[in-house]
Length: 205
Image 1 (cartoon, one colour):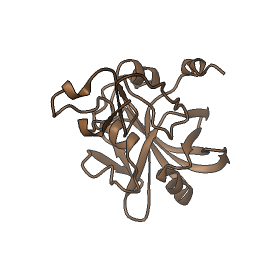
Image 2: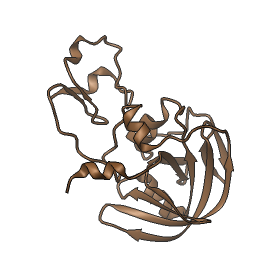
Image 3: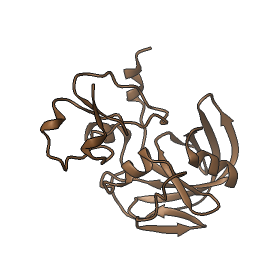
Image 4: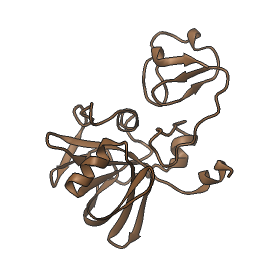
């Protein structure tokens, strides 16, 4: 199959959040679909700690990200694990029904899990929306915008992840971004444009 055809399917970019026994957890998702007026379907990789938390609590929130999302949101929620990192620690947030929501988002949804469909790599949560509000009037970020304008890449746990063909240059060991050229000529304070990690995480390919 030509994987390029999959890039024509429309996706958004969201943060799904839940909680464990101690704090809020969360990760970036792009596979979210409205099934009926009050029902959504959400796909989350089995390897994501947030997947475990959603199964435990049967409840989650969705923060809808805009094209003006803070630069640290996607690197933190997309390329780190809530099992090891308190992703909401230094973030402006609001708490709704015990779950942290990103304050600088377009709006949010709260949903209760009604059914779970398991695939080889992902859980698909069928959930009923119990609450939802708009926080600001901005343009939502699509997956296409994230790739084409933000020059972002997909985490390996994302349903839409496609392994990049390696070319000559340097590859970020955290997010997979490929720097084409000689990164050693960059200043020492150079950071990955996708995950904001330092120059030291790049390896030659």
